[in-house]
Amino acid sequence: MRSISGLVLLSAAALALSACSSGDEVTPEADASASGSAGVATTGLPVGSGTREAVYAAQSEGPEPFVRALYAQYVAGGPKGEQPAPGQEPLYSRTLNALIGADFRAANGEVPNLNYDPICGCQDQGVFTLDSMAVAQADVNTAQATVLFTNAGEQKDATLKLVREGVNWKVDDIAFGTEESLHDMLMKVAEAAG
Image 1: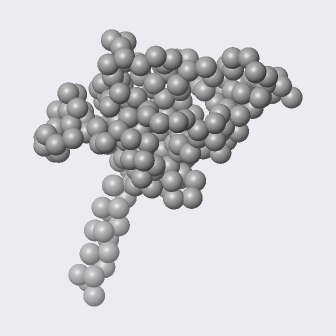
Image 2: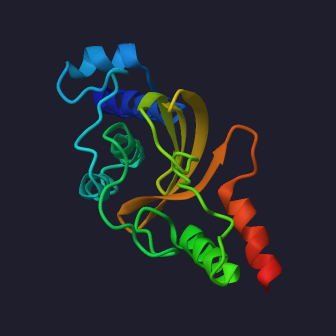
């Protein structure tokens, strides 16, 4: 009986310590040694296949595989195929899709406020490298990813707020450095449109 209670106590302590983890940061050196050379970009970070289908598949695997697959598209030359209509992107949360749709409708045929790719913060993509990423899962339905990448020689840092809707992880907000977040910018547009 004493050994069972000791085992339970040890298991509880291990769970408590793992719950306090702040998330795993992936650096090129650590990831390259853990994954070998298959599917690894010049940065050492795995890139996967870089297709929308791979990103959709990764959505249910967890926040880290989702973000990794999301940026693998850019490392592989950018998202391919037809893009969903504004406000209907399966990679974005319901809230972010609603705000993007409202921005598009408020533009009334003109250029909307969101006139760039929010994942890379760019209108044009050049040579793209994923330099580092760290994902911290706050609870079972929310996480935050901090990503450092270089696009066309310009290094950017992005913070992605992620939510789980059903079994899939989705982007709920994006901010670059100290700039206003995408959600906040689009919320102002929606409020102004009434």
